[in-house]
Structures are given as structure tokens and as C-alpha cells.
Length: 182
Ligand SMILES: O=P(O)(O)OC[C@H]1O[C@H](OP(=O)(O)OP(=O)(O)O)[C@H](O)[C@@H]1O
Image 1 (cartoon, rainbow, N blue to C red):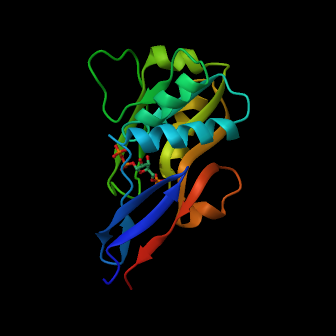
Image 2: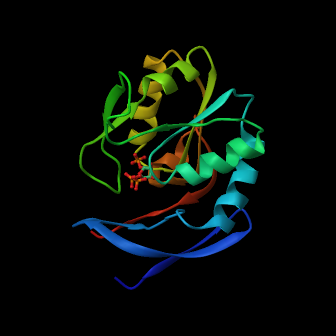
């Protein structure tokens, strides 16, 4: 493959994303915001401006966590909710669902602790992630939130990858192409 990186410009920040093969016929530009304080803060500031009025933000472990932290801080929210990918002993009566994302490509569970579920009940929820690609992850979080009695009023990500960029039901800052190998 000739192209080894993809130059991403988002929220005034530029990053060279490594292009990595994830299957025989597909490569993706690897976008990892964990550890990237500059990018997370810049993107969070732009994303909060695009959100409708919401009461609470929910993300899925792991890469959405720094983003949702910063967005909740900017919005003056005292809490945010993280759907975890394994059930921990300290969780009480978790609500559980399953997901297969573009990067992980195997079934992962997603679960919401009972106490977190009670915080979304009857509230206006924005689901936040770093990237929306197949949409499976956001959809699984939406199922959890709905099961918990929350009302999903927005789904937002820094990037919409591949076909997700054509969706009109999500909020995003920039598009990210896929890199078919065949
Ligand atoms: O729209 P989708 O196809 O579901 O893909 C997007 C999801 O995939 C990535 O998570 P990943 O599975 O890599 O998990 P991680 O954040 O725990 O690394 C990314 O952070 C999104 O949550």
C-alpha cells in the first residue's frame, strides 16, 4: 500500500494517522485520542457547541472517556456515564448488551451499572464517542440508555468514518475515509 498515513485536520489540530490493515480487504486510519490532551480539548470545545440541550452524556469504554470527561466539564455537568466492556464485581444489577465495532471486530459486551442507569432514567441523553463507523457501538449504547429509561436526543463523535459520514442523525466534526484494499 503506497499511502502509509492519512493527514487529519480537526478542530484546528492536525494529526498524521497511521493506516492499518484490519482485514484482508480493509485498512483504516487509526485515530487514538487516548493521551492526546490537545486534540481532545479542541474537539470537545467544538462538539459541545453542536449539541442540543441535554442533561447527561454517555460514552462507551474506552476511547470515548477523555472526550466525554472534557465535554461534561465544559457543559458544567458534575457527572458523565461510561458503559463498560466487562462486568465488574462492584457493579450492581448491570444492564448488558453486545457490540462488534469496526476496530475490534469481535463481540464485546457493553454494560451499564444499575446506579448509572438510574442517573439516565427520564433524562435527555447525548451519546458521545470518538468515532462512529459502522454505528454498532453507538447503537448498542442507545439500546442500553433506552433500557435504562433515558431519552437519547443526540449522538455525537469527533469523526464519522466511511458511510457514517452520510448519516443525518449524528453530529460530527469531520469525515474519515476508509481504505479498501481490493
Ligand atoms: O461505529 P463502530 O463500528 O462501532 O466503531 C466505532 C467504535 O470503535 C472504536 O472502539 P473500539 O472497539 O476500538 O474500542 P476501544 O475504545 O475500547 O478501544 C471507537 O472508539 C468507537 O467506540
